[in-house]
Image (cartoon, rainbow, N blue to C red; front, side):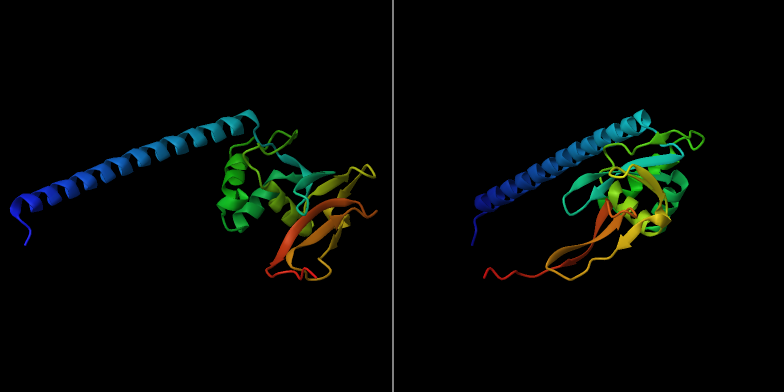
Length: 191
């Protein structure tokens, strides 16, 4: 049987540990709230510094190489907003940020605008819109502007382990954008 002074000591230590854990949890929650507030303030300041206009302009993107192409793609902001509304809001592809940026912008301004740096994954929306024949692209190789309907869309040709990419090219075969469409998990033979 545990004696009364030992029991009191165990209860006291247990309560003390619970109190420390509770205080630590409260501290971490305050710190997280402060970080989120600072991040939101930074995003809002960046959005204010580069407001959306009626025309959004981005570089083409090659998802297989994780780098921009030498093409320039343009979309009307209302088309992008409609695409965002029709998609599932997903923190991974920045649709919430894109929606806020467009809604806070100036649709009467016809000067091209580029998404702020905090919208890191705009290329997913861009690729999706091009496959739906929306927007236009200026090919850096042949220096021509094409409507999205004139671009050539090529689905991945064979299934392979890893990402399989679809391509969008100008009519002359120059890469405008490459997007990942299907990921196959597996192992490759080393022989």
